[in-house]
Length: 144
Length: 144
Length: 144
Length: 144
Image (tube, rainbow over all chains, first blue to last red; front, side, top):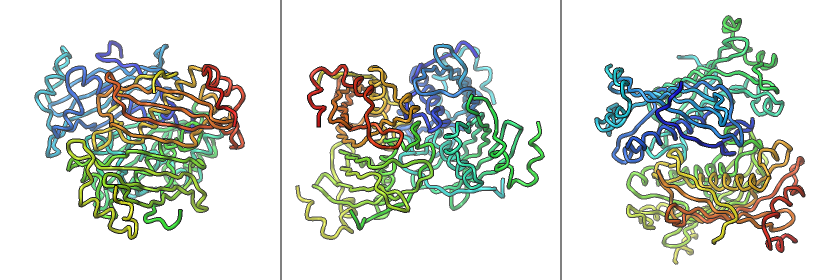
């Protein structure tokens, strides 16, 4: 995957490594979530603000392919593409690559939705507009 | 899925909940890993001991379906079934259910392998024997 | 310190260990917090419920003496004593000991308070009553 | 405290916030550790490399004063000063301030030592030299 809509650079922190000396498998989900939230913020949708309004952005399904482990001292980038998958679901295609060589570390597809105050899936129109906004030609997939 | 080969009961700790008041998506991987390691210990394979020998048990692929979020105060069980998928891969089928009602919370398939001292996939014969040991009739899938 | 008012038993989870093979220094605060919240629940004060009401129970000061590191596979107990230190502050004296030998692992003093909806320290009378309830003879220190 | 020997800028990640909407008390220890390790790396001492050699840099005592909570979206700096306290102990004085206003968030004193292969405190001469190196006039306190 090339031409990410959003990319963020980060560094491994030593406490994220486990007794094998490599970043623990769950920590990559932290990295991916942080990249998604920074992307959301950039398009004008703040995770924390939605939470305060009682709208919870949640992960419905995660597929993670671990290619090569990150270690203490490594720097890496998280690239992200976004696609509206249906009325109630959106997908983040996320790659982690080690810097500076861009060696593939992890490839992920994260499906998310929003839950309204009563816990039912409902993507607010305002959020949908923000997410679809910059993704020209990608709205073809939005019908269920 | 019924009839788990291994099951462990745990409780949500408040620091595992995020600002939405629900357990953060990455924490479920912690729960799943802990259940796998307790299962491994039960069959006689200690994750930490393998790490000391330079054999790293790693996740190759994770598929996680999030059904219903856990919250502060919830108790839950992690059920686990194991299948040797190939010479170099083993699969853990793991379900998290909320207690006492056993409401489905998360369903996961975690593919793992072992990396030897030089970082190449190689499942030690001793580990293979321990893992396959109790899984009668499941070794049909081990040839690749 | 003997005769804890509350004690809880837990086990090290492998993801809590860092690349040194020992439990990371920050994780002990997780253990201590979990023990405090379980204690609070036992006396009838639920951390999550207070949070929903806009009352945040927060740590003001933590003193942690690390005696001996916990490792993969260790079981341990967190013992807790409580003292109301002033109108606005309460103290938790917490020890972690490795089981079954009760070898000292960590000794901590955690000072906490409650913040009301406008972020100012204020311990609700109901909470104060619950906390002081079972602590016979310890209320001498409550005056500021 | 002014004139830090080392300072690093970081941002709150949403998964670090708990159900109160503020950064969980244990996470500040992660921030502090990351700043210490980056400082060590800058003076030429790599935490991970020492761990591989069987030399564990560990925290002996931590004192943390929580002044003001960090929240989702906050940026902050961790400032650090270092003092050799004795033959076997070194101290990190660390402040966290919220940016850009430098509002005090947390003040900490972290006492550390090194454990050799047999688990006994022993600060390698090479590490001592690196740590003392840039700290003109601060070596007065090293004798005990």
